[in-house]
Structure formats: structure tokens, C-alpha cells
Image (cartoon, rainbow, N blue to C red; front, side, top):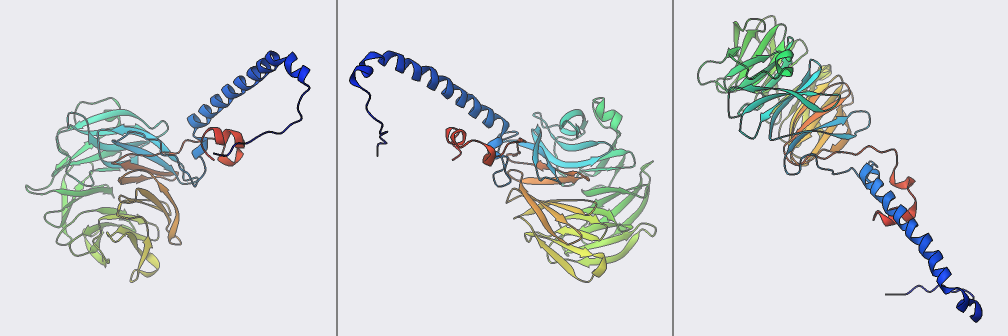
Length: 383
């Protein structure tokens, strides 16, 4: 290892012998406090996340190491903020002033959680009558209530019940015929729409009473649904089609065909968006429904949600969340949110993402790496 030698004029021999102790004491009183201040500064930097505040180096601070959790992604900055941890996660929805999450606890109970969006803290929970979470899209908001699917049954939960810690949601508000399995549920035009994956039908129930109003065949299967363009959109995975149900007529008015199986659907003002398992999002736009526009996103797109002209896509394999401007249409931002992001809920400010693996977040800090002194970066191991 090379040695650095500081060359300086030699002091007179007499002077060197006169004050060696005082010089050593002077260095000790200067160096030790400076080193202590440097260590404290480094610890402060690490604690605030300043070393990871630049867009190119997002922090990987775990919310729940090895577990599941919810993160918040801000549309304006792309910042990822930590949310609560859960034993199990399945669905997520945003509405009525709260964020709603379905999942389970340590005893394998099926739970509907209410989360405060301002503090990202769980403030209420309702036990659903099942110990197994089997429905892929099992929570929806509308008509002043939260709707949770359990097997072939739908339960209605009003916010006061969830926030007061009601023990259980019983009895069922509506149910499919025996043998049915709910693929998705949405609320529109005073009605609760429920898809049956086994029969390829959609059931329309009155949102106020639970009375069955119509049964609409849509294809071989009926899974993910979305509301938009004056209709209810329903995916048929086997035939790679999405059918539009006319709300006034209770019948299929048009059918769109996509390159791959439409696993998830979202609707914006200018079209219908689906994830089709090809590593992209396909959109049928209003201006030209005969042409399918494909927007590349991360690997294994799963969760899909829209708010206004923004579409959010969670890609499970790549651990990312893509933000799409539906008017262009193109990806305008991509952030890493953790291992296996799954479900997404959106509002005007951003998105909530259910992450099945290890969530990550950005630690907000006014400082950036380039603003810190070089000696502090070296001390903290950042250069």
C-alpha cells in the first residue's frame, strides 16, 4: 500500500524537544471532537435517508421485512411512502374518505381493514365470515358502502361499522347461485354488479335492497370488471374479450378483442385499459375502438387502476409501478415499490399499492447527495 508523506520544514531541534506534549494534546483536542461530529452527522444523514433521496437511488427501507404491506406513491413526485404491514393481503380500494384493504391476520381470519389515508394507519377492521381468501378482486366502493366478496357471497359494510370495530359482517347482502365464484364486483347506477367466473354471467343486484334485478350472459367466463363510458365492462379471459353491458338495457352492447387474456380492467374518459399478460397494457381508445394501442410496462403486469387521465399498473415480476398518461398514451414514470406488487387503488393524488413481498419506500429529505460535503460522503461510505 503506498504511503503518503507530508513534507514540511524541520523544526529546530530545541523547539521539537521543548513542547511535544502540548502539540500532541492540541491535536487530540481538535481531532477527537471533529471525528465525533462527523460520526453524528453521518448517523443523521443515514437516519433521514439523504443518501437515497435522489431519483436515481431510491431508498430500500423495508416496511415489513419478508412480509406484506401497503405503500403510497405520489403522482407529482414519484415518491414512495411507507404504509402499514399486514399478515396477508388481497384487495385494495380507495373511497368514502378511507383506504380499504382485504387480507388476513395471524389466525387466518378474513379481514376488511379501514386505513386513514392521511396517516397510513389502520383505524378499523371487520371480520368477514371466511377463513380463506379466494376471490381475486374482492373489494369495491360505491353507494355509500364498502362491498366485500367472500366465495359466492357479498357483504355490505358501512364506514361507521368498520371504524367502530364491528366484530363481523353478517348476514350476506347478496349471493350467487350455488357453485358460483365471484370474479369481481363494481357499483354503478344504484346497482351492485357481480361477475360469476364459473358461469360467464354478470348478476345485477339493487344496491339498496340486494334484490336480483338482472342476469346478463357475457361469455365463457366473467372475471374483472370496470365502470366507464356509460356501461359496465366485463372480461372473458378464455376468449380474450371484454364486453360492454349497457346499463339501461341490461345486455351486452359491444365486444372488444385483445391480444391476450384480459386479467384486469380500468376505464378512463378516453378508453378501456387491460393487462393481458404480455408485459404490456392494451387500451381500446374512444377515438378508434377498432385499433388496440399497446403500452409497454414492467414484467408481469397485474394490478391496474385509473383516476382521471392517469392509469397505474403494478408489475409483479419487476416490482415496479408504472404511471401512464392516458391522453398520450405513454408511460410517464416508473418507480420501484417492492417485491411482488399485486393490487392497486388510485385517486387524484397518486396510488396505493398492495405489495406481497418486501415493500420499499423513499425517505423524504431536503438534502441530496450532491449537496453534502465530500468529507461527509466519504465518512458515510457514499463516495
